[in-house]
Length: 124
Image (cartoon, rainbow, N blue to C red; front, side, top):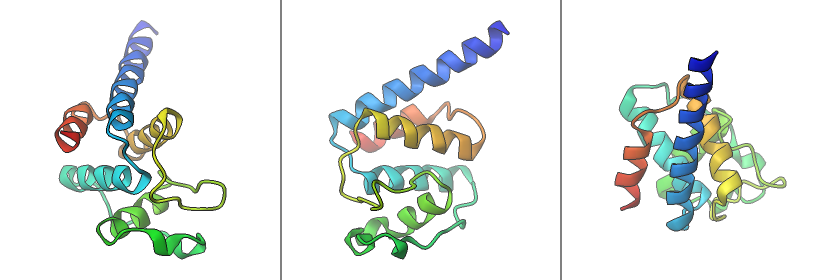
């Protein structure tokens, strides 16, 4: 039981640390989706999973560099919409960042121990 709590605390601390970096850099949703997409791809995870983002009225607002990532993040349920919109340029606040990060770690099946280093590298 103690090991579970310690592991849970580590994941919570990693999420908090990464969210602080994301907020400090004014990261938007499509940028964060792209970071997760590239990290998952680098680790060899399936990034083929996809879902139609054209269901969102603002799907045409997704930048070209982020299209694959947003389609993947929607299919992987890392991004599920923001009041019926994909809101690709919406700034990620602490709650959204924590939610997306938690969904991402659930997607890869474990807390990404190197995720903090990867986000630091991408953000700096």
